[in-house]
Image (tube, rainbow, N blue to C red):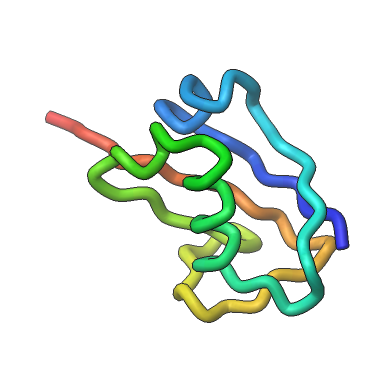
Length: 80
């Protein structure tokens, strides 16, 4: 299945583009996607935290992804 992942903040800077289109096996989990992206872009592994959002909600690691899902990587956010 094809997945489109939107990237924000430092994740976008690390990857060098605002979104990625990936091919993933059926049943791919949010954690599996994150592991795959950290392998492809090792600098992502250096982030203090990096969350996966699916259809505008933070996803648990075991959430199964589907081709039409809106997927986003949410990097750590600082505020003041």
